[in-house]
Length: 165
Image (cartoon, rainbow, N blue to C red; front, top):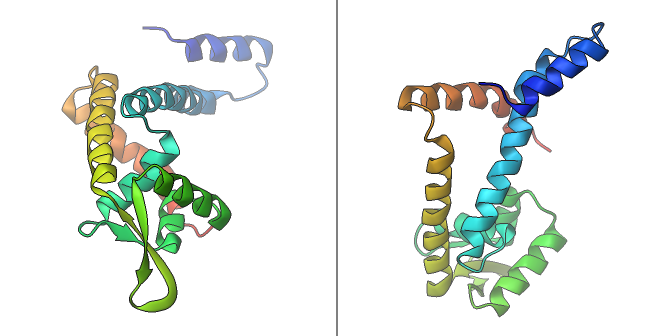
């Protein structure tokens, strides 16, 4: 089965036979897949009136376990945004009733961000929708192929994920 990347690689091999375009065979597919995943994520989240960034914050809190709260600094680490961006996001989620700010009992100046019951419901429902979309994308692969692909991708991403920014 041929795909768009096969056509792109063939064109570059024809036009620039002096270059080794083999990396395109993997990374162009990863890039194209990322675009398809982004569309699937947006669809799954829009069904629950969430933006992707809202999902990221809500599910970070949800994964923390009861009482579903983190400091803004912990949220920064998990979502890879600046403190100003995170402050704006917390403000917007608070206005929507999906999170609340609470004083940090271990730091008088600190704040904790906690999921509200509605925020928890939206996180759970949108995660279920996302997983359904992602299962559909992976349906053509056998379980062993999915495991192998996950392992190979881990080898590529781990160095980036384990290097301080």
